[in-house]
Length: 255
Image (cartoon, rainbow, N blue to C red; front, side, top):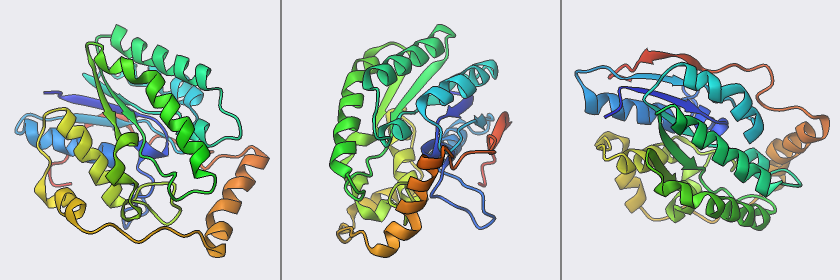
């Protein structure tokens, strides 16, 4: 059982798509921290989340990895590469090599690595087949890390059910609250921890699949064109943002 947990990554780990009424985001890592805390009660579990949306793998490692290690947690969750995958060109070997180095850096500190692949949105995106092939190759290139001592690998990219449109937010790139809950369920199951029934993960999974996704002119105008605009101007959705939970703090059980 882990008593301290730090999450690093991009929008997937920050929780974009699972917006709360006050405008903040929650997401799967928050759910996992809550699951850990409920399983450990009455002993406290401390949690920090350093993830920032829009970050490619390099900045995640350069800006978040050492900061996470410095907090001295028992487990660090690590995901990255999704934003690299969506660029016109992806240096796959370099991305895989840096990912490996980061996992080894965490292990060298005696910290357990919770390694995740992101959920697969490519059924719903323009050029989805291209991005899907990249994601498959990257995941395969890192699969052997799952057998290393001190590593727990959760392959959300291979979760076929998670590709259903019911789990995705209107931009079709980020998970919604149901999707984040399902990822958290995958993680807690991999860690041997119970999944709270009130999250409704099993109930949603048992329901009929959602309708086939179609990309309308409104979708391109509201989501695709702004994304392209940021790429052309070198901007990121994470510019000027800081970590939502930069310090290890106790998880509230009533969250």
